[in-house]
Image (cartoon, rainbow, N blue to C red; front, side, top):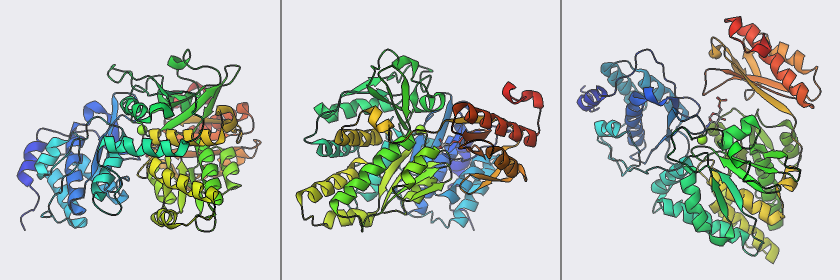
Length: 540
Ligand code: 16G
Ligand code: MG
């Protein structure tokens, strides 16, 4: 049977986007990520995969995000967004990987045929107007229509995808423009803080990324309800992106970006976005000028406690159950704090895992310690809120607030700007400064290390990445070591984005957490083999 794929145009255009021969690409935790200079063939092929995904889903809009995210500027990536604004379905990650690795144009066509057959894609289905940035040749090869969303944040792309796909339906998510996004956020924020004292200005470190452009527009839409002071907003300076600034820098180094040292006043709160504005980390300097970080775990604690309180005041405790999703990286003290108040589930690292687990709750709060996260309200919960007849003014206010939260909080993916407004709402309502928020619980000292090993795939985990099943025997040695440390906890997992194995450890004292991490890393190196002189000196 002749192929229904436009084989000629695929082959022709594929000739302009050769795959580098020795490289193996992998659709990992957040898409294809590697040095931008070798990604050309991947982008072309992602264009084709996106077009096929859209065909498979009856012409619905698929999103494609090209971003360095939290990484150094040359370290780029591309990922796909499914119609409801969520991450690409897992089974398609495998197809995307195979397709990206086909070595010749013929192999590429063969790999595409396999996808068309296995996924039962009807290539004659029509395309509806689609949204896609760059990748034009991939679309051209497939004859797909694309809409270029321009330079924007990852969460705005997710917002647009869902808005386009729900346009004109009873589940319309919002107007399918950036203006629609900002209007939705600022209108709900204003409702939530009406009648409350305005917070002092908030400093935002924009990581010199696209969040700067979005934060500027947001600042204008918010008017005098909140003043945002934009720092690290140089989006066109080469090399500035995520360099000594941004959410990842703050989380990993546990320090204020040097560029903010003379900006931030004692007592003042600030936050850092990452390069594509889907991570958020807060911090403040205390009266003595010491730095305190408020990471994704602290955000989860603040927000979950606030939502539970609203649900209770509204009188909806029986009908609306709130739950939290975390990963193994969540600080043990945060897990304890949350478990005392509501159900907490631990899942594997990566937004897609948290998101899916959070969808199982009526209201699912999910945050990774690194600042990715959001709060999901299930459709039945949204319906309950819409139909509820409150019997007191206090109940009625609480329900209005909950409804506004469903508008304020990005329902498609973690969104640093939306999360930032959510945090500001809670701080406003509770009259908290950074200090009161920080005192909800005290973080256990912790340490993260990474080990370069010959084969990270030799490390396999279970129990939401908290335990190793392979290499055999290694987990038992880690367990034995952990027992010797007060409040000790440690786990080892292969990274999904870098060719390394990560080690996390926490203990009651900082020196003990450091020591535990180093000793577990030592076990990893002992097990993994390889050249002993390539180990960092602390493991020798
Ligand atoms: C990616 C993930 C993030 C995860 C991180 C782990 C998304 C959008 N991003 O940045 O959620 O925490 O990878 O990296 O899913 P690792 O596997 O290298 O530790
Ligand atoms: Mg990011």
